[in-house]
Amino acid sequence: MKKLITIAIDGPAAAGKSTVAKIVAEKLSCIYIDTGAMYRALTWKALKNSVNVNNEAELIELLESTDIMLKQSSRGQLVFVDEEDVTYDIRSNEVTNNVSYVAKHPKIREEMVRRQQMLAKHRGVVMDGRDIGTHVLPNADIKIFLIASVEERAKRRYEENLKKGIHADLNELKKEIERRDEIDSKREASPLIKAKDATEIDTTSLSIQEVAERILLIAKDI
Ligand code: CDP
Ligand code: CDP
Image (tube, rainbow, N blue to C red; front, top):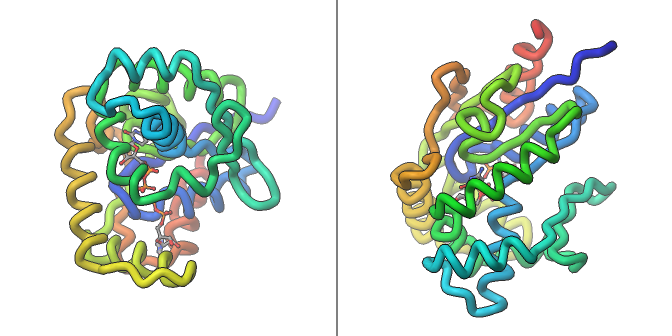
């Protein structure tokens, strides 16, 4: 029987995780799981229901009654909250500015990790996030930690916005990325950190294709 490969991709915001993870997943006929979308989905619902993002007890109650579903489609990965398509809404600035507060709470992380491990069970997966190699899939076949300079990451977000017709403020994007990285790296519960056995790839001057090829080369030996 063919082995089901598991690949964990972690790293800070806009390092290229999701773009590269999707390419690698397709090449290896694995499913792609975007764990950041799950934290964003809960944040979206918390904001909609005026639940304080710093109140862990209220958030966990909300999460327990929330169905978050990731669906693969020809349009890419779609995200549903209680059967409502929120794929677009979870990328709003409001969600982006609040998600790291929601993701700080240990009980929220515990439940998210449980759901993510269920999604990965008996499947070939490429999963991206902040704690995949360290907590969600500690036995992953391949662990990748993507980094890039903050200037390059802000530029990438700027260009992404431009493609949607939005002229964002480059300096504001840089500040938002730095602020989120800081909260994600300094929280007590499973912070953003490179797993000891992860391969670090600095993507600052690499193309998407080059990064994907490096990972696929590692996967060839598995
Ligand atoms: O794509 P982007 O870098 O903007 O972020 P994301 O992957 O959508 O994740 C949004 C936020 O969710 C992160 O800044 C973290 O606060 C949180 N997150 C996390 O704590 N653990 C994960 N495994 C994935 C995301
Ligand atoms: O998932 P994460 O937040 O780490 O980053 P992403 O959403 O995959 O990538 C952010 C942006 O950078 C996307 O628009 C990618 O096309 C772009 N990118 C790039 O220009 N060069 C790379 N090596 C990787 C990503």
